[in-house]
Image (cartoon, rainbow, N blue to C red; front, side, top):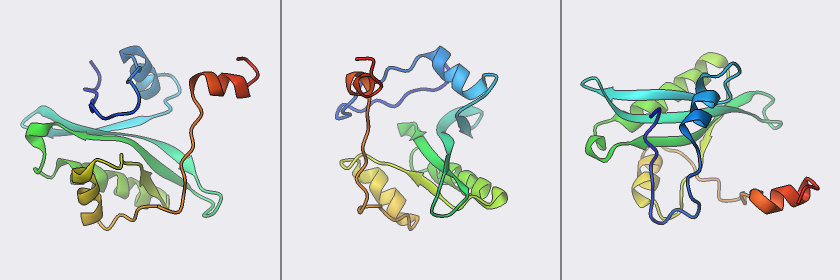
Length: 142
């Protein structure tokens, strides 16, 4: 398996991605996502999966962190921070001005971790999403 998918019993949506979809997104002819792996003694301790965004407010690309996952037995060892540091470095090297992500509102350990990095919640924005039948209806196909 390419990545161990994190599962949360409170998660509002089921994980549907297949290994082939991940392989194509990350390693296909035209990758649409990128991944960084944190290792501990040669074993995968965690990963970050991200993609590029574009800000019309700033006029430059940014990084959207889709997944940051550290295996429970490796948490507290600095792997999550190292992965975020790597993404921040990419932003600095390439002139990107944003590193953004979402976190589930009940995930207090992660929220505390992000606050410890001085990350600022974007409470003034309401996130919207179209999937499945509503997306098909809007496209005129449902």
